[in-house]
Image (cartoon, rainbow, N blue to C red; front, top):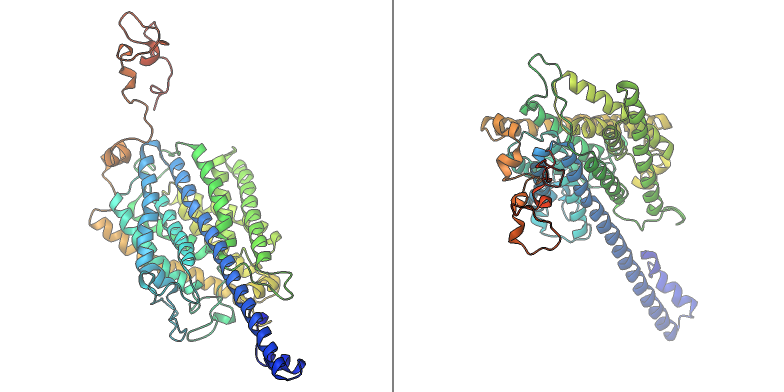
Length: 530
């Protein structure tokens, strides 16, 4: 937009065209002043549009927390509903404070002068000091915070139904304040050592390309999934899930398919902020101005949708073939697996490639679920398999199918920049993607294993067997999520002024007690079986 103002010798050119007289000089200066003002206004307008777009995307990503809450609630047993809902609320709250104090600085704290880059960790903007600046505004913090708490929410699903509440507070703060931000710095900061958009700091792009993880198949989904993997392994399976011989015991089903489907659709809706919103700036034209980031935003929404749809349909028929039934719960998880996989390459692949991504991700999830059952691994939401497994596949997929034109549009660089192996771009991008998978797995393991072991040693990780069997809603949270007996069934109608109730000889209304005139219980809202 700076091209609207007078630059270089523009003023002299105008003065020459106007005859070089004193009046011509004045007119030239006047015109340049007006053009500079227009240019400044256009820059301000562009910034305002970009920030508004980013804020709207942040709202969509944050709305995914509602989707996570509904999905988690429906996937656990009714006796643990309040517990899992509270952990989802606290993931956002604890994550907000820890990401504000240190997380954002670790993730995007590049030196303001862009001279002292640190490829491993950021070291500026503590508690948002120095924000806003030329690169970041408050909306960028909000957007990134919504991503951070998504990673913590993934982990909570893996260790649901047997974890002490205090451990949720500890791991959530640790994950969003330290573990996740450092990974996001590697991939998304302008000086990150693995970043595909690295522009400052020592060294250049890894293999001339860096690792492309546009919206976080590795940064968000692998981090949350691998953390959940180690938490579930160290805690062990839920009581009764496997018998002493190691074979499958009770297959615990979530108590509400309705909530699972509702949560899935809310997550689907939020993913339109998660992936397209990761462009951050929308008013960025490509060559010629007809195409721009607005084109990439639309394409990203399409690839996201197609990958999820392909994964859902593949899961539907795959599970029918293997298990003999049509399962809505499996389809929902398959759909989410397709979304988690495409998140890495959503902006740099063609729509047809997104269908392949979703198809393979469905079989990745099915395969990891079967392996988990063989290894006696218990994850109530299949979060480790879904986000960790499908996220890793998505990172590799990008190294195979990234399109040259899209990579150059989104990330820039020289015309010979590496792109997808199957698209003719050589193996350098794939090598960078493999390194991303390995270092994320190693970093999360190195940080989260000691944390979960310490929590276990200090008896802060798992609840007692008695509490686990009774359910945490009653033993830890003072009640149940669903009130079937609230005392109103014992009320005396004579206490109230009512004309519509017919009284029995003893003064009790049949409708109020849930009893018919023969003394037999009748179905009602307060005496349905639990």
